[in-house]
Image 1 (cartoon, one colour):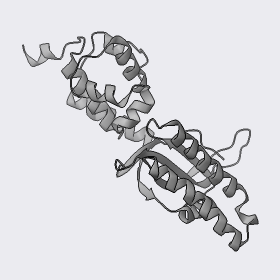
Image 2 (tube, rainbow, N blue to C red; image 1 turned 120 degrees about the vertical axis):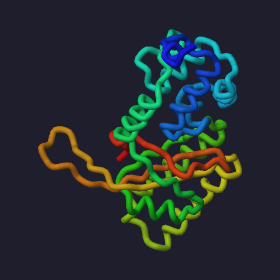
Image 3 (cartoon, helix red, strand yellow; image 1 turned 90 degrees about the vertical axis):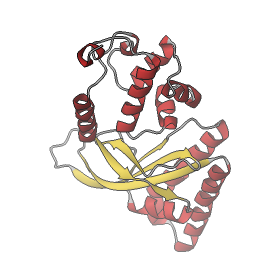
Image 4 (tube, rainbow, N blue to C red; image 1 turned 180 degrees about the horizontal axis):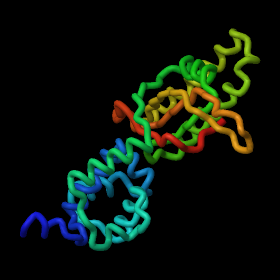
Length: 229
């Protein structure tokens, strides 16, 4: 088979699908756990796909949806396996639409409180499927962080120690449950609706939960997305 023939549209076999999913996941700087969370598939299913094991129609649909295909059956139909130039173009498109941030490990309640005092917006999310108890603890931590951020100026320095302890307790409990927190912050230009004013720069906190011991060196986030005030 010639290279031209081998690149004709066709239903990807398991080995080709494995290579394709790995390429698209790496372009997006996603871990297998993140792809699992976004696609709704189990981590074990993602691992099987990337090992070149057979997958069913629904699995391919879930992967297509997670990878932003307009047609969720695209991977169940004859498909043109991307060339090196097309992969490069896809990466450039992703880089235009997203920003890559260095992932810093968050282990201190005091540091998280300081981040609350110095940021105005946040994007807090989980990067993998957690247990119910871990989800509840992560939700508590998020609520405590936002509540403190909204009224930090009202606290006496002595009272802030209790805030530090409360946040630390949630962070420690997450670690016991196998969850690690990574964060980054940057200034974003925010334009409010129904106003002609120029965009306002606000510092934004990004905090993502990852499996303990599997923290990435960096993570990508869309340049334009809804952020919590």
